Length: 346
Image 1 (tube, rainbow, N blue to C red):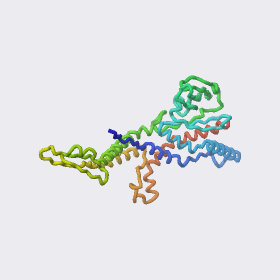
Image 2 (image 1 turned 120 degrees about the vertical axis):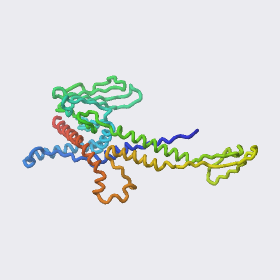
Image 3 (image 1 turned 90 degrees about the vertical axis):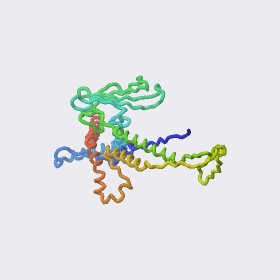
Image 4 (image 1 turned 180 degrees about the horizontal axis):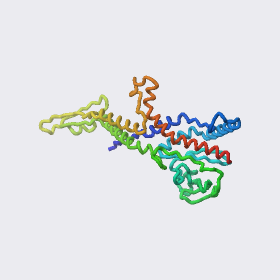
């Protein structure tokens, strides 16, 4: 009656997303401002300007701990389908680069050109509270109208009541909305992205179910079922299964010819091999969904003979990361371009 089933959750999806983000951005991308056109004809002034811009970009990114934020943003993107890189320019904090998860922003793009943002609104909780009247939500809104970017900032409470207009709706000096949208996978015209948690959750759920069922079976088999036949009831009330326990039993004398029996039922674990095969299959298919090699020290023992063999094992994941950089690369360049453009106009 006091038995509680096992509820151990195996974080397979989280583990896979962490591994993918590490391989993608643990070695940060080399962000460098380079000259356009014929490099051989670059003047001394142009070289000095490039040096200044590179120092500017590096200083701003380092001040914002960009490399650390990039790994966390990659995880947010894998989980929530998309993430936004927002660049702020203000007198107090200088230039700040912030990544926002999908639950904190909405955006619109130009009709016929999804690369141009026409509206971006983000919501940041500056004070969290169970009481709605004490909660504070900061709304920042950018809008592109006739090639002019407008900004508005308002503070609300948890019920959506306007408390303070931080920045009136006004024109900015920026030539574009200072935001880069990173979208995870998807097809042509995708503006929402695809969540890898959504792909992996079924495999993780069934892996946990079968593993917990196995744990419960083992726990039950550790306490074997005792049985008695034609025994005196008073002598079988508390039969201990502790090591070295002695059962002093008496047969039921009320029976004509008692044939007393005492025994223990120990269930066999005949399903173990089949269960191991099922768990390995579920785990392997889950890993294959994101091209992550399912390798362990046990499975790879004696198999790795060179660095080329190891690279071949990870090649599908390497190609997958290169594919993801086809989207992230241009958006990172856009982010750097926003920093330079904003530094120039401000």
